[in-house]
Image (cartoon, rainbow, N blue to C red):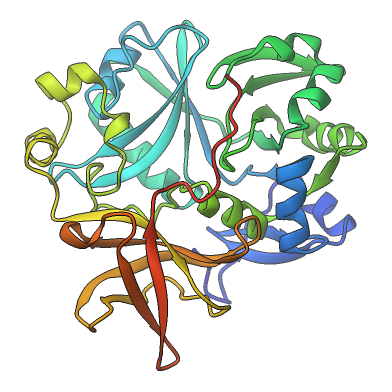
Amino acid sequence: MNQPPHAALKETPLTALHKKLGAKMVPFAGYEMPLQYSGIIAEHLHARSGAVLFDVSHMGQAILRGPDAAAALNELVVGDLVKLPVGKVRYTLLTNDRGGIIDDLMVVNGGYYLVIVVNAARKEMDFAHIYARIRDRCQLEIWEDRALLALQGPAAAKVLSRLAPPSKHMMFMSMENLKLGDIKCGVTRSGYTGEDGFEITVPHEDATRLAELLLAEDEVKPAGLGARDTLRLEAGLCLYGNDIDEETTPVEAGLSWTISPSRKEQGGFPGDEIILRQLLEGPGRKRVGIRFEGKAVPRSGAEIETMEGAPIGLITSGSYGPSVGSPIAMAYLASDHASAGTLVRATLRGKPVPGEVVKLPFVPHRYAS
């Protein structure tokens, strides 16, 4: 979400390094952030073949303490956090009473605490929402003094294992406290690209030194928000505010898999009646992938029609897919037009652009198994 020109932008601990490396800086979610260094397509393709380093320090990080922390947060999300093993990570959703998605977030079970990572544009709202509902049962400590870096790509594991050999044994969606060089970090094997990789939380004062340590490895190049967006789109991953929001349910978004089996049977989270009914009866619309012909790239907000011209939905994210080799998009379509193989069209600058509904993701995930 871009800021108005007069708004003062925040900086991450790596802002000076981004500028030193020649990044093109842009406003994003209230921060001055790197859009690209060597070019979006080049950075995207290097993430698919080597390893790239993203600064995601604008994300919200917090720690939830107390013996009742998991049970308390459990009442606000669709995933079962009480049964989350120590050292594991869960992707889950905060929902409202209408079944809409307040935010998607990562939750880490650190043993005697939970670590929560939320989207940059939603962090103030998320933390206020959580605090207001469970403050009498646990303590919420917002980490204002920690940076977050994401090392992503097929070479990420090789790079990290040189600096921290125990990382080679980490599985997807697991967490370890490691030392990279002499820097103490919290490391999860996770990411937002569809590739193998790690997200690393580190104190502000160590962020630049850690970034330089990782960038000194031959396989690693810096990457900006542009490549992060095209990578996640090819991977079929949702961007909050585009593909999911407070009017979108997990079932419509194709995120029913985040609802734990016990929750599908018993509910126990905000909006459960609406969401469970949709699981049983099916939603009226569904998030789908669309691959378009030609070079024109339909963008967010473009209307999708049948080939006969009847409106059936809207694009929520669209871009050229560097690994796919064609324009791609995610859209919400009426459920009776959402099957793979359905031919559709969008209108771009007054001209119809034909496309085909395809199964997500556009590029297969390559997470560590």
